[in-house]
Length: 75
Image (cartoon, rainbow, N blue to C red; front, top):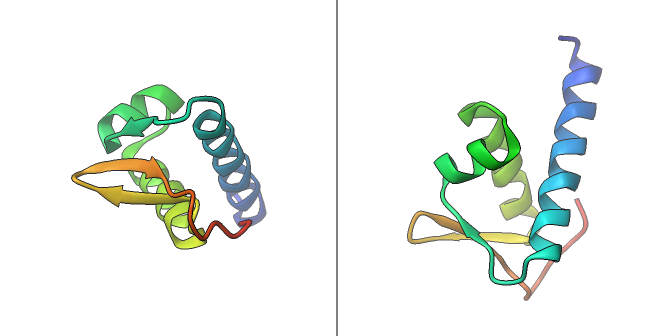
């Protein structure tokens, strides 16, 4: 997979994850649950979730990823 294709895939996955969290307020997922929901491998899922944590959209607490409504910056 080329770098640009991987980058596009990651961007699309982040958008998909963002939409799920926006549609389901209060959603809290562990990494295994997230990989199952979005049908991606753990490494790819972790990179996407980490990107969304870095942007301020998600936060990781107690092993689960939740929407962080304070301080979100677009990815």
